[in-house]
Length: 337
Ligand code: NAD
Ligand code: UDP
View 1 (cartoon, helix red, strand yellow):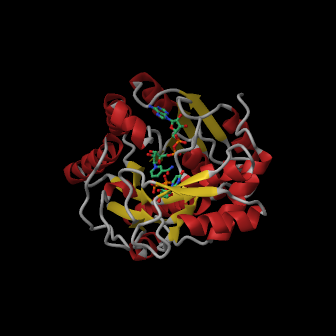
View 2 (spheres, helix red, strand yellow):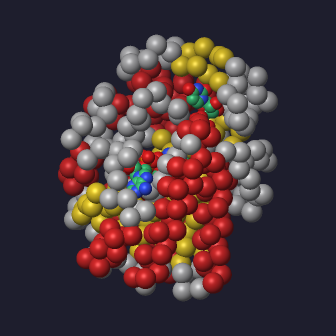
View 3 (cartoon, protein in one colour):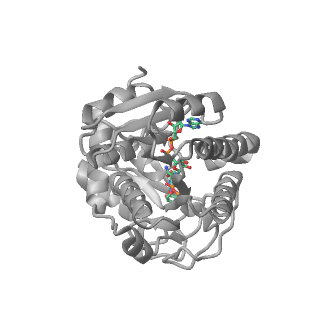
């Protein structure tokens, strides 16, 4: 059985489906701080294998020890954490406590239980202001906010852990921009309040919940002046996790891998693609740049292809179509319970 922390969240829930499709049973630990309990029923409806759930916090040692005592856990996928960059600058302590403190508790419990295989959700944010695209894994890392710094610290903690005991098998996966939803439209991204990210914001404009999109900056040195990112379908990302687990089982060691498609898409190109699949107008206006944004950021993917034997398969139209189907079938996100 695989323990999935944060498994009711956006990426973790999709990873549960991929794990289940690969024949694994999963146990989810989630404190519901950024997800709803109704995700569980949805997941059970689409996962072919059993999905256990424990409501609890990764910082709670008693809960962790009970989980490791109850289930035969062979590996952990660790998604639980806080992820809003803006909020992290206002509440750094809660970000360090949740992300770093939580990871330390988890690692301690894993050590005690003798479970030494971990797949960790890192982020392209660890490349900081790097603008040498495509970005390879060995690029210099830096952080511009507490959220990013928490990912940097955790990456370093995991490296130290692996150096101290090479029985540990650890994958540090650096996600680029996850978008889309499971093709069933039963699970997807359900942001609280005003979406901070582009794709959910566009989806809410297309469905009529918001009037127009603010495009942050039209004067970047990119092909149309708007920011370029590497959007990757969340199911490709989820399958990347299963591939990482297999790679760890195959060869052990510590892997640090970008999960992206390797190609960049501008904001205007996303608007156009989304408008085509949804057959809706997406009104927008170009406004000031958003502080902290880089012009372009997309992954070098050769390492993922070689080490994980994984490559993103779904294209931009698939990402928009699946995101749109999820939005239309769940205009208000998940039900409360
Ligand atoms: P999410 O908020 O949808 O999911 C995180 C889940 O963890 C939520 O269900 C939340 O309730 C749970 N959680 C948070 N703190 C917890 C705690 N202390 N104990 C137990 N459960 C807790 O986020 P997501 O988009 O699925 O992201 C998952 C991971 O991937 C995060 O670590 C995030 O930093 C990382 N990541 C996300 C993105 C992205 O764009 N979504 C990009 C790069 C990296
Ligand atoms: N963006 C935008 N309007 C929005 C949200 C995002 O123009 O309401 C742009 C943003 O400036 C960036 C791209 O869309 O160029 C992706 O932003 P997102 O916040 O989704 O991801 P990240 O900044 O983490 O790459």
